[in-house]
Length: 244
Image 1: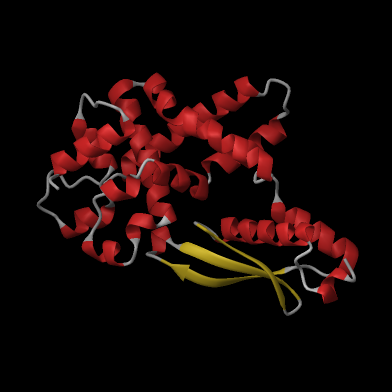
Image 2: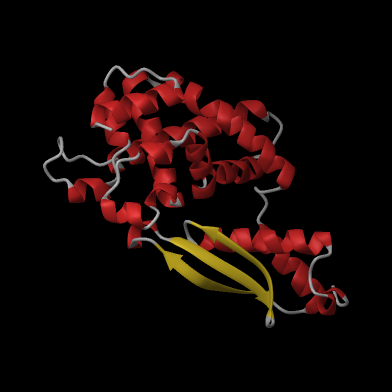
């Protein structure tokens, strides 16, 4: 598929006609593609658009939450915003609009699963927001991202994904066993600037949860969340449950 066909196909997928399709092409271009194709176009990757899109998204999310929850305090609004804009959430939104299929990435990145990598999808999604903002303004960017954000927000609230799972797990384990859960990184895949981490949490030598994320902190939160779910569902080993 040619550059113009690829751009047009993604524009059709998200239902937006661009006045300047070059902006969308740039948003879909990963640095690995530019590194391997120095003579292609103007050699611009999506990192500047990602920078812009990140700021635009923060404002859209803050405005959305402020208006939707007029009686919620700043602390909880901050937690909800963090849950909405974290790497895993934005990668999920990117997958929902088939973003990975249309990315221009290098051959090496392709071979290592780059189209599905959380950090690549997250940053490309932010770049698309930046491209829409430059091409059509803030209202168009909000029209694109608010509906899926609202659906994601409902899921976040239902599952408690905005709660600091690591702190909650530590409080519960320390109160009942007087020990601190131990977190360890078990893998880190991808290039240095786009690693995905896998973290396990254990009590003593017993594994109680694991999770993945675009940072060690995010992966640890997912591991703690998995452990809390197991604890609440009664799935932890009986030897631990006797004391919990």
